[in-house]
Length: 186
Image: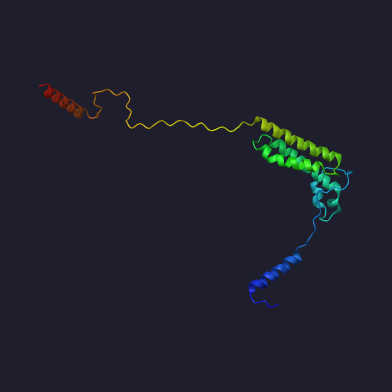
């Protein structure tokens, strides 16, 4: 194989390095509990951090059941914290449907099944409370805008009074009006 361009050579070299560094692991079913006789203990995360990555404990049903119990308790805490949100049903109802499906699995221990049903019922109950308190949307009432007037408004307007701030000019206008009136009458 002839490498004509440097970019092709770099690309092949990087692919080879990545293949050497990468371990391909086959993922198994993470929540597949095979027996109904499972001991569900509280998880000690500090102890879990000390275990090796390929420890047998991570592949046991006890670990899976304990992990589910921990997740359910965390979810129950979230439900209690966010129960006042307006959007509570939209957030938690899909999770409740997933929990109902999970409770219907065959090899789930009875204590875990009861815990799943309790959390699911709590979510459904809180969602129903929110649906009962909701009110239908209403159109916002707009404040009526009056028709704009072309004539200016005057407050305390007295007919015949001159509102000119210069008194001498106002007196002169008044005298001119009197002269015009006098001429009309004569």
